[in-house]
Amino acid sequence: MSNPIQDFNQRIIDEFRANHGRVGGPFEGGRLILLTTTGARTGTPHTTPVGYLPDGGDRILVIASAGGSPRHPDWYRNLVAHPQVTVESGVFTYEAKAVVLAGEERDRAFARAVESDRGWAVYQEKTDRVLPVVALHEIARPGPPNINASSPGEAIRLVHDAFRRELALVRKELSTSTSTLGAQLRVNCLTFCQGMHNHHTGEDVAMFPFLADRHPEAGPALDRLRAEHEQIAALVEELRQALTGGADLDSVRTEVDRLTTELEAHLTYEEEQLIPLLDRT
Image (cartoon, rainbow, N blue to C red; front, side, top):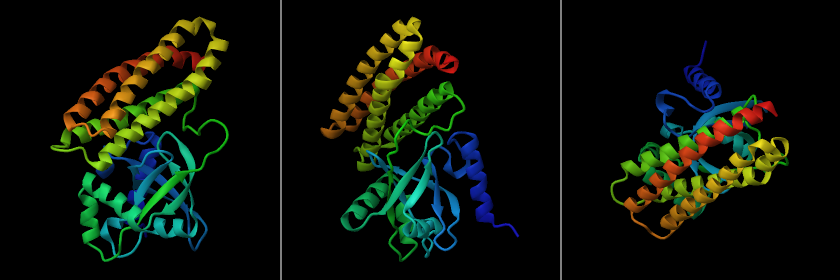
């Protein structure tokens, strides 16, 4: 006999992988990963769709809510027994170390989650157990990141689309905030800024020199892209200063709108110029 929960999860997993992280239904428009853990008793891998919270740097947060069930979800019991896990973001796949937060660190992280989505508090109210908050720390590996793409050109497009989706989420969150900039929303914005900085740095250091060496005719386009990186870096820094300097919500919205306009034009131009080169190289 089939298990309805397992069947539902498998449909989400299949859709997630087929569409590079895009899904419909209850997860549509949210932040979702596929988390693969090692069974605490069986030692076999188990993959589960899990919502996550950005947390800056090299980690994200997941909450073992199980919808407010009195029991911890299986994936949580698995990672307590075997803390090394695999994370799929739809674009990247990487190994991570799971660390269960404790004390004030856990409470601060959970308070941020509740501030951004009241549903976490509803789940906590349904159960006597304290909902665990787990940090997933990416384990650095040598070499390029593992991108779920069939070609270098597709990899660039998928990475760009991931930035577009995250920026759209941030803009939606800003548009629904009515008074102040919440702590989790601030973290979401700062995490996006750091990710964009890292991406452009990687292009400047590795991909652009690689393409310039093999395609000298692309020099003018690469020069323009480098200049646009500097312009976007300046906008990102202005947004970062607004976020850390206590700027009001309208000021942050303005900075995000400016960044969105410049970034979309940059990403579109880069795709037009570089995807054909990458797929020929």
